[in-house]
Length: 295
Image 1 (tube, rainbow, N blue to C red):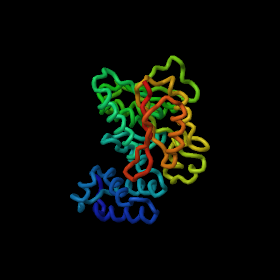
Image 2 (tube, rainbow, N blue to C red; image 1 turned 135 degrees about the vertical axis):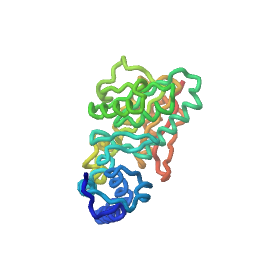
Image 3 (cartoon, one colour; image 1 turned 135 degrees about the horizontal axis):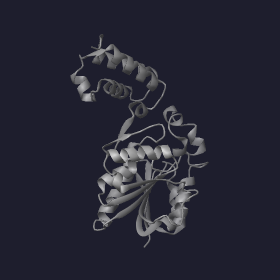
């Protein structure tokens, strides 16, 4: 039988919060709640309903271990091994970009387009550039039942995580994960798509050093760095658009908050799209570019 300590849930929660606050961890209370809940298998509400529950010595030891990792700026999602995106649970590892809530806007735009334009279409073929954890492809497959997705990434390790997540959500039969470098091996035999969606690397060289330690030191640089000015992937996607797009489809790309004019100009210059526009996120920052492929 596990030996009980003298510490109860609320006391430990307060100590964990203080520890993280002293180390300038944002949302220290939330972090403490999630870490403690992870150790003793209680959600945030249950923690407060069980505030007098004593912890075992083993649980105290696990809390200390996780707390030190978070205090050293390891991302909370890596410590927990998972995160939520579009109301779905996703496994995440240091091999994948951690899904952000802002990217959900990308999903909303694609879903809205499909409902307005493709309701009677038997199959909607979607290309997701930069699979990562599979959060974009899986969210789309889970929401759009007639979507068939191809999700590409240069990282075999990321693709493995994406496939595991797809299998967990029972959509792996509608998503093909492929190891592809869009700067090299996009062959002429590669199919065409109705929709191209991507949250590409868009951090410029100058911005990279300013990222938080959680991002800069723990997330894959290949999923963050978009070259000197952060535009390399947009230029390449624009270059491939005529080759990869079925006419009449949609392009939907996440962008950096200060890149709207530059990315709009890149895609206007192709002459392939109309109704190009920028969608803002909940903080009123430029977040997503969408446009229709000319028929």
